[in-house]
Length: 410
View (spheres, one colour):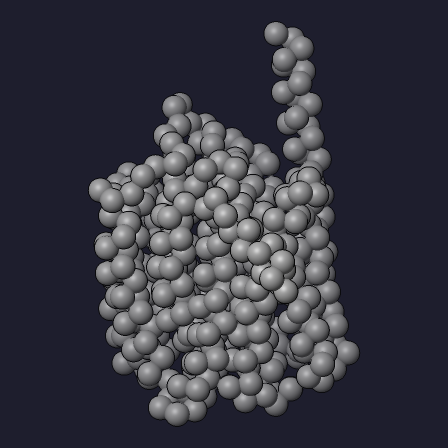
């Protein structure tokens, strides 16, 4: 047991102090966003909105995320990641507290749009900060540590959120979301102020190439959009499936989704460290992650039994553990040739666009065709995503051969 513990802790060695602080800030912030997994339930049960209403609200959620991610990338390249992160956390806290007082469909569409616009300026800035605070050889593990913080917060958040809902109601979630964002702002100022930290990797790029001329990145972008489209069902249609078909309570749903975060916290870092030693390319690993996520939807059609639901969550969790860290690593490697904020912004935008179409489409599909056909469609989209990543593998080989040919010419 002692050896196992030492091997586990060794996977965290070599990461900078700044990365650890960034992870803690992310943990505090993420632990507070416990309203998000319950948002669709809150809108339907407390505000009596229809599934179609919820679908359009989630579309506004995604639109805010797209614009926020784009704006965050632009501002990061212009004024620096610290100012963007600080402002985003502060304003997000205030907006989350105010959102509980909105009770109309139009008002909630506008409110959630503004919340996500401000909140998602944080993501590109955080990724650029992570790149700055990490040595080149530690990039993937640094990303994994941040994901561990996110998922530890996500593990505790829904479970606590379920308790809060059953005891004092949904309003308490909005207060906690807002206050934790404000606490994260204070910690950011305390430990990561530019005067107190050191740069481990210079992010300045001379004569950066335009991201729009990077063909491989845009193939990757399409693939990650498809992955995001199906993955995000676990935050909108899947909770409804758990409630309506599996007859789980909010607390049980929170525990099930919390299991996802806990397993990622426990297993992702050792898994990533081991996968790095296999020398399998990040793109092939992302391909495998999408495969597992697609299968997680396919098996749900066996029935709404608790065992099947748990297996589905496990498959999705493993797929997520593989796909996300290596997709981050792929973008960071491409961003070395261009503007860091711009690359990380468009990486975030792939998921933001998935928010626009994924939640709404999922809601409309289950409303029109039911859960079974919806899960089959998600599986087919996973297959399409795998095909896109096969095209990316071909494109990367073409690029590699072109570079070799240029060297021979010289």
